[in-house]
Image (cartoon, rainbow, N blue to C red; front, side):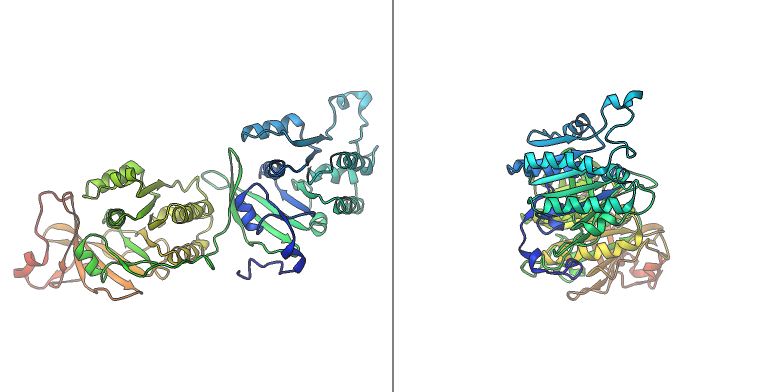
Length: 513
């Protein structure tokens, strides 16, 4: 286990303590099995971050296990909570709801002083009402929603802290696990409850300039227990909160047979020194339209033909266009999709968070046993990142995980420009085990494509530059080395001998794609 995961040490008490599942498999993974039982926790976040949904999920998990559970609401009515549950397809049967919101009569002039008016009633009277309900139900799980009202009733920080400490001591002797929800509506950052609580879970909602909002959470404290540190993306959809733990590749490897994986194109495999090795990543660089996707599609089709599974994640085009274009180049990907050997998923970077994308890739490998993974392209993947600085760090972790699983990974990146000097939006070439470079060049009054392998860590490869063509009947074709040219990668090569020009280039085809 990495040091960042062991943020709170390995206290003997925490290691052997029973844990309560949260109802979210991802959050349970972050907490190493769930919340340590019989403790008090703070769940804080701005309004709309998902605190109520997460709390209901926690209680429903307890009800499913036959545990008595209690939801104490000081801000929302039973009808509102029932509506939230219904939106997720949940029934609150088995969940005890104790409502402490002001009744409608409190709006009348003769009833302006209620138990919720801080100038008339002490916080102790409110807590006594809660204590009576707890004594009656003897709940295993309790949720307080929210602390904002309790803070207002207390009127001063000292009394507020003492009341929270009193609640903590009260529940400590009753084997109850308590979640205190705080919407952080106080003017100043309040660390009172954070210092008292056994653990703190922070929920955030990020507003982007374009696209859907992003949600993430972080466990900032969990006394005497291990947990996975850092930010973790999550989303709220019908069915509740789904958490995508930050990927940690360490310790997730498995045994696999080292071997070269062929593309089905003999000349291309020769250029690569026999193919791409299992457990390696390959970066395919080149300008738009030079054949990067077509090249990767051949590896997916070859894997499917061997009876293996492949997965393609496409950012830049729709699925039908991708499959039809591949079919037009002689790779029958639609048939492989229908047979279940290939999955093609379109990714919308404006809607899908980076954490959810990584989770989807891992699911394809672990559940669907994908042996070839294509990410087309990194340009689209970059748009899903809230900050480009973290792209290489997250990509390094993902590639390490895929390599440890024995997966052949192809990363496609479009470079800026068409001829001459090229530039990449971000440099990830040092992360890849193999780098394949595609270029346009001009020859005999036509635009041609060149392919070369500039890097391969795991074995030999040709250092030649070959011409590549795309045709409807034969798909990707790779010709002989362009020995009679120099300056091919500049886009305007110089022909050394005019007499051998036709032998250096592939012959013309009527069915050129």
